[in-house]
Image 1 (cartoon, rainbow, N blue to C red):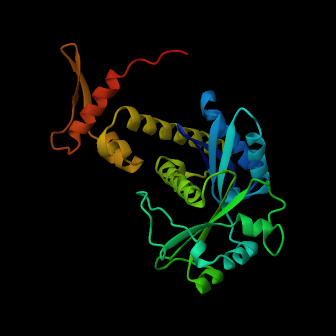
Image 2 (image 1 turned 45 degrees about the horizontal axis):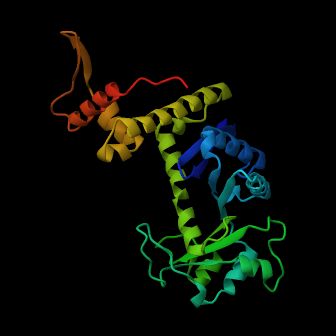
Image 3 (image 1 turned 135 degrees about the vertical axis):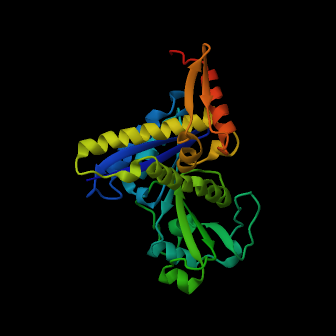
Length: 302
């Protein structure tokens, strides 16, 4: 059997996504696998864009091995490598949260950049309490530049809460980062777009990865490679040939409106023509897409 592991790397130019095919018995936070995927993801970025990297991971990546690996990458004077990783709400974090007064919680920004009601959400830094609290340095085994940021918000109906959260009435989310000289509000807002990684996983499943695994590892490797190529082709299609809502459409939408259209390319009078049913709602979008693709310049060799 085989499963896939996704990891996204982001910098100021975009993002890179790597996929690793693993055995079904592999652990969720295997350090060797994480580092292998991160290395492959970095290798996909052009060399000139690897000097300023932001690595975002979910809670499974919050391991000593991964954090220490990124810390070593950041030690080079020729590049800056920061991380923003989901952090577990453990006993030491709960004890620190209990010491935070209400007035210390800062304002959380919504997706439009406007401040939310302090009675609905808040953000605060926990590093000082965990490093210099009554219990001593609770983060002694981690790099000295590691910072912990906590976010709380009123839970939505049906949310699954821990006993600590049910008693407190707030839902907590924590993250760890090594970015200095930035306030907790900025760091929390910067980490939130990591949710798009889950969108990449979902759309990847729509493009073929959802049919994994097979009984043979060779079939899984070939299928994973084909699905990865399909994801790349759809990204270039949206970037180069589509405009408007279709440029942001997901694979299912593109498959229905563009890719599966009953159209034909015919030749006559020394011309190529495309015949699209007049009743098709997206006939013009498909015609524009094909004309744009045909007008693209030929690739040049480096």
